[in-house]
Image (cartoon, rainbow over all chains, first blue to last red; front, top):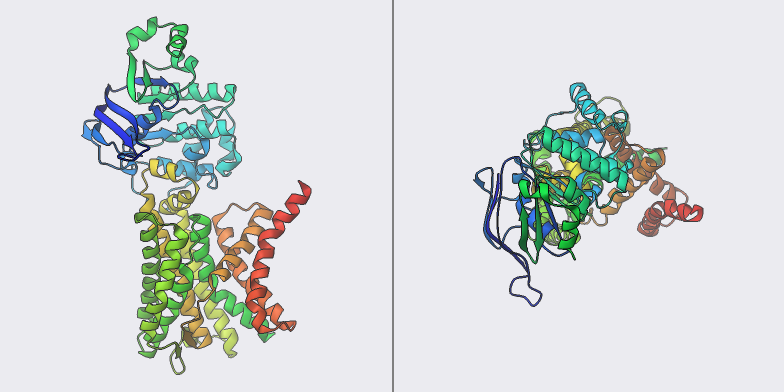
Length: 249
Length: 289
C-alpha cells in the first residue's frame, strides 16, 4: 500500500544548520498493516509521516501509495487515499465550525468542494448515527462549534471524520499526546476499532510504549533518520513490553 | 432626520466593504489593506463607464471583476511569493492608486447627467427614500448570495481554511487557491461598495478610498462584539450583523458631526471610536479576571 524507496530529507541543505532528518529509508507497508513507529525525539518519525502525507517533499527518493508514484503530489491531492489525525486536537478540526460542518467537509475529502449545499436532514441523521457509536453523547451537540469540545472529544471526532469518505491510509501522529489517560484510552480504542472494521492501512507514531505494545501488527523503531528495528507481526507477538523499554535504555 | 437618513444610505453603501472585510478578516484571518485601493477602483470604473453611457448590465460585472482581480493579485503575492499578507495588500493598494488615476484620467469625475442605479425605479417620490429602497434591495440580494455561498460545501471549506489550514489541506483543499478566491470575492464586494457610493455622492474621486478599510474593520468589530455577547453561531445572523455594523458605524459618525465636532477631526474621532469598541470588551474582561 505504501512504499518508500531510498527516501532522504535534508532540511536547510547547503546551509550551516543543515539537518539530515531522514537518511535513505526503504520501507514497504502492505495493505491492512497497522504500523507503530517509536523513537526518541528528533529521530525522524514525524518527518517520515509528513513525507508520506505530502506536507513536505523528499530531497531524494520516491514515495508510492496504492501503486501510484506520489513523490511530487502535494498533500491536498494525496487526501484521495490518506486521512490524518494530528498531535494537536486543534489542527484536525475547525474550531469555529459546527461539528456538522466539520463532518460535511470530511465526508467530501476525496471529492471537489462545489457550490451546492450538502448539509441536509439525511446527512444530519447519518452524522448523528456515526457519532452515537462513540458513546460520548455528542450526537445531541452536532450544531455546536467544534471549539466548545474537549481535546479528547475532538480527537475522537477527528478519527470518525477520517472514515466519512473513502479512506485507505490512516496516519496518526501522536494522537493521544495532548490527552489525559482516560481520553487517550478511548481515542486509541476507537482508532484500533476503526482500523480493524474498515481494514485500513495505518501508521501510528507514539511515545507511549504501552500503546506500541498493545496495538498494531508491526513495530518500527527509528533513530537518527533511519530504521533501527523493524519487528513484524510474528516477532511482535513474542515481544515483551520491557524489551521495548530496553530499546531506549 | 435627513442627516441620519444620509448616514443610513452611506451605511448601506458600505455594507459591501463590511462583507468583504468579514470574509478576508474573519474567515481567512487576513488583514486585507487592498480594500482602500479596490474601493476607489470600483468608483473609478463606475465613473468612467457611466460617463461613456455603458449599460448597467456591463458596469456592475466590470466593477466586480476589477475588484476581484485586485484581490486575486494580493492573494497570489501572499500565497505564491510567500509575502506577508499585510505587505501584499499594501503593495497592491499603493499600485492601484496609479491605476485608478490612469483609469479616471484625472483626480475627480463628476457624474452629473449620468443615469445612476438610484434613478432606475421611482418607487416613492422622495429621492432619498427611493434611494434607500433600491439600496436595500441591492444589499439584500448581495447578502443572500454571500450567505448561500458560505453554506455550500465550497463555503464550508472556505470558512475552515482560516481555522485550521492543516486540517483543510488534509481534507483535500488547495488552501492557496482558496485564499486567492476568497480575497477576490472580498475585493469584488469592496469594489461594489465603491460602485454604490460613487453613484450616491455623484462623483468618483481618487482619494475616496483613503482609510476606507477602517470603515470595514469598524463594522466587523461592532458586529463581532454583538456576536460574542449573544454567542451567535449562525452564518446568516453574522452576515446581517455585519450590515448592522456598517450602518451603526455611520450613525456614530453622523452623531459625532451633529453634536458639533469639527469635521477636520472626523478621522481622529473614527480611529478613537474603533479603538474603543476593540478595547472595551477587553477592559471589562480584565477587571473581572
